[in-house]
Length: 301
Image (cartoon, rainbow, N blue to C red):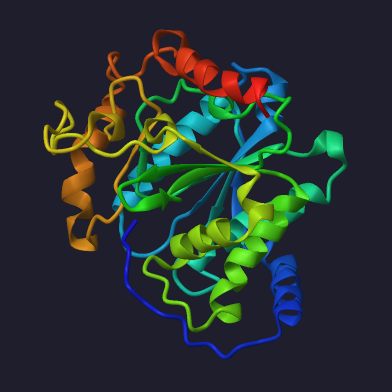
C-alpha cells in the first residue's frame, strides 16, 4: 500500500444526512464486486461460513495479480469466500471501508445462521506465505463477544493494512463513521487518510475503543525481512518481520515504481511452495501465542 499526504476538502454536510447517503450508496455498491467461492473441500463447513476475505484490486500494477493469486489459493484451500472490489467507487483509500461495509451489510441482511461471522481485510500489497494457516486462529474466543475489531501497531501507530472485523451492527457504525470522518471533520489533517481517520475515531470515542484489541503485528500483518526474503533484517525489530511459517508479508509504504522489485522475491518463495514456509498450523508458534494472548482477557474481561 502506498501512503500519500492529502486533505479532503469536500464541503461539510450534516452528519446524519451524510451517513444516510453513505448507506444508500452501498445498496448499489453491493453489485460492484466479485465473489470468488471455494472449490476445495478439505475443511469443515463451519470454517467456510465463519470468515470471509475482502480485498480491492485495481489499477495498472500487474504485480497485484500475483499477490491476489496467493490469496485465491488460500481461499480455495481453506474454504473462504473472497470478495474483491475491481473498480473504485470512492476516492483513493476510502474504497477499503466502502467494500468492507458493502459486504458487511450484505451479510447482516441474511438470517443469523447463514451469515459470515468475520470479515478479514487484506491490502493488495500482501502476499500469503503460508496458505495452511486458518484465519480463525487469530479470532477472539467466543466468550469475548464484545470484541469486534483486531488491529496491529508499529512505530507509526496502528496499521490497518490487514485486520479482521466482526459482522455486527457495531462494525457498520464504525465503518460508516470512518468513511464520514473527512466530511464531518474537514479541518482535521489526516496524514494517512483512512488509517488516520480510524486512529482518531479510536482515540476520541470510547464506544469504539472498548471493542478493539491490538494484537501482535506478526500474527497477520508481518513486514518484510531482508530484500531477498531469506534472512532477517538486522536494522528492523524481528517481531515486525515475517518468519517462515507466518501467514503473510505486507509491504506498506512501498513506492509504486518499486513494487515489482520489492515484492518479487517474496512472491517467488510463495509460488515455489517451499516446505519451510508452508508449515502446518501445529508446527508454528500461533497456537501457543494466541492462547497465551487471550487467556488473561478471559480472566479479566
